[in-house]
Length: 69
Image 1 (cartoon, rainbow, N blue to C red):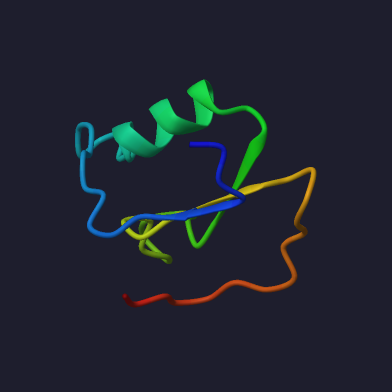
Image 2: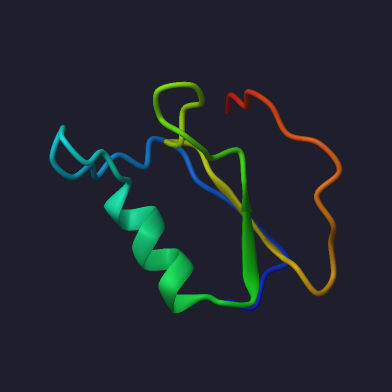
């Protein structure tokens, strides 16, 4: 696809409650090392179900917050 920015909605594929993780986001991070992630973080403080991937070599994160599509 080679996009500069990719936004996701309702990406919910969580692991066990004792070790909450967004499994799909973890997979995408592993498979796309040229991309950084915004709008994702500690799920107890920040919803990581609407992450935004962006090309770190072309764009810089200036700010992030709550994103609703």
